[in-house]
Image 1 (tube, one colour):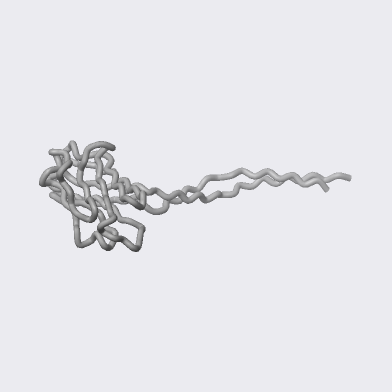
Image 2 (spheres, rainbow, N blue to C red):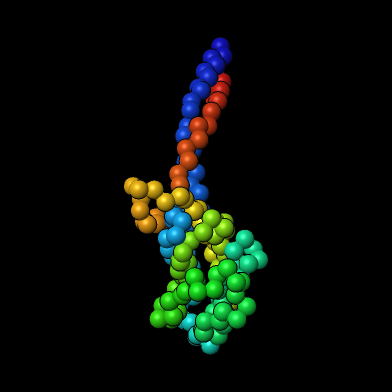
Length: 159
């Protein structure tokens, strides 16, 4: 005699995804810090070059051999972009962008050489409202998001 049993079960599969892109929100006329840091622990400033670009091509800010360089900076960022030189030895190459405009929205990339590191920040510009005033918010989605997905399992046992 043959007995067949079927088992149908649902198993939840947990998938973790990591995003390497930050999203930063700020308002027109305000200021925002665009984060960029190196994972290298032993930095020699004379060897460090950092290049900030907007939407892949506009030159926002450069740090050449550990020194600020605005010689090739696009005109629209003149006197609006600044960095934090005392932080360079800690691997912090974030920049602050002041007097934000609609045209500042987009993707900012920070390239760190010679370590070949790249960080990406998406800047969203919102209209100023009475409730928010000149407040800028950093809503980084760097880290982990957990997604649960059902998985249907079918077993058949013959006895």
